[in-house]
Amino acid sequence: MIEALLAGRWIAVWRRNYLVWRKLAAASIAGNIIDPLFYLLGFGLGFSTMIPEVEGVRYIAFLAGGTICYTTMLAASFEALYSGFARMHVQRTWEGIMNAPVSLEDVVLAEWVWAASKSLLSGTAILLVAIALGLSQSWTMVLIVPLAFLIGLCFAGMGLVMTAIAKSYDFFTYWFTLVLTPQMLLCGVFFPLSGLPGWVQAIASALPLTHAIAIGRPLFLGQWPQDGLLHAAVLAAWGFAGFALALRLLRRRLLA
Amino acid sequence: MAILEAKAVRKSYDGREVVAGIDLALRKGECYGLLGPNGAGKTTTLRMLLGLTAPDSGSIELLGHPVPQAAREGRIRVGVVPQMDNLDPDFTVSENLLVYGRYFGMKESEVAARLPKLLEFAALETRGDARIQALSGGMKRRLVLARALVNDPELIFLDEPTTGLDPQARHLMWERLRLLLRQGKTILLTTHFMDEAERLCDRLAIIDHGRMLAEGTPPALIAEHIEPEVVEVYGEGVEAWFAGHAKALSARAEIHGETAFCYLQDAEPLVANLKGFAHLRFLHRRANLEDLFLKLTGRDMRE
Image 1: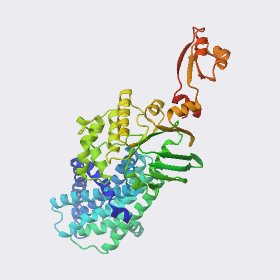
Image 2 (image 1 turned 60 degrees about the vertical axis):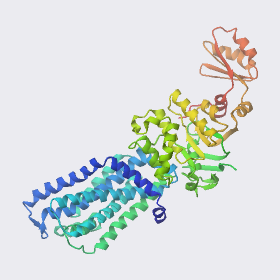
Image 3 (image 1 turned 180 degrees about the vertical axis):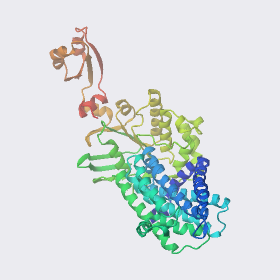
Image 4 (image 1 turned 90 degrees about the vertical axis):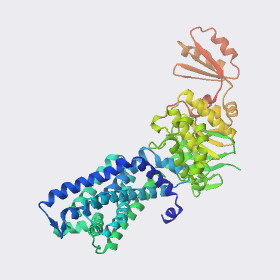
């Protein structure tokens, strides 16, 4: 992987995806902003009449820190699953690329980094919305931009495993309903984990979104995360493990 | 030196041997055809030659690079036209060429400089900004060919380049391929159209069940395996005529469906005999590649 990364052939593939995104950027950015904005305003304003403060901050600000992480998770997942599958299987874009002097590893690496880039774009968009809403003024939230990329690597790596074994788009519903939605509900996007039963906390602590929020929320609120590097290492570990497994499965699928 | 060389290449899937020992060597500037029915192993062979699938045994050298170990280096001077179009639907015609050039490590300016010639070659000069969806089947096929030329390759792989095209589009495609041959490019072509092979190929191999059944120039192959003349007879009562006369007057004769195929050194006596059967219609022609192909691979349907 390091060798492929340094050789840089993946950059041409990344740029291909970027060019497609740029052509459709207006719609894509609008989607990136509008969806989390509704969440923030709907839940945030709605609940804040009942829950004025959580852990010493306004509920809507508490929610914003979680929503940013959750939105970046979804951005990478959609890209690695639906768009990745379209390029691999439906449009046969990968096949065309691999007829050139580009290897499968270069292609998968590019997809991985690209999906994480989508997270970065989406995380930045919603961060700007949160700033515009006056939810945060602390400089630490700038670090959410690289965090969004790391969250993207984590979920795109795992998502590519699903893409590698998918027969059709329908398969991805399982990933969303069984893996991603539970994380949204269990990992502290909407409420603090500390109020949940011990066994739920134990499950949650194994899930990557918990670790993303453990870094993202404090940064958003102007605090320094506790054990930040440890949480980042967990995200990176899930991402790298996913990428490595996905590459193995894709070799078997496409190069047999 | 061979541009592309394969020795005793084999490949099995789930215990079934799809390629069962293929040898070939392409000379610079020739058009070499791989002919075979569906499922004969053509596409698997191409994938192995490009280094996209590792053979179980045997050796391959692509433009001097061992495959699959150094297939990437080999592919730098290769162009590929795949069986199914895989143009980028989100891009225009020009963007497809520019983006593809980057995969070869070409600079933007380098590809941009080649762009007008490539568009002209594909007869798409006025379509540079068109979206892919707006192109006809023939235009897409020519764009895929132009895309395969973006890196100025020495060797071009074409996997069934004219399948699904109308006659006008096929003739334009053939004309372009002949142009490439005149420029000194080497072509490896798979097809199951005999007229295509006969028009384009300097040499060809007929493969079936993963094996090479014959190899040579089209006229030599026909001369070696098939009698020079063929009479096809059909119409009411052809079975009775076949039973009574065909065998005696032909070197070889067979009946399939409602048509009798008679292969002969000299068709005169048979044609004279047929004049006595006014209800029968016949076609007297020279033996062609299709006769050879059907003789070697049989007439059974492949599905």
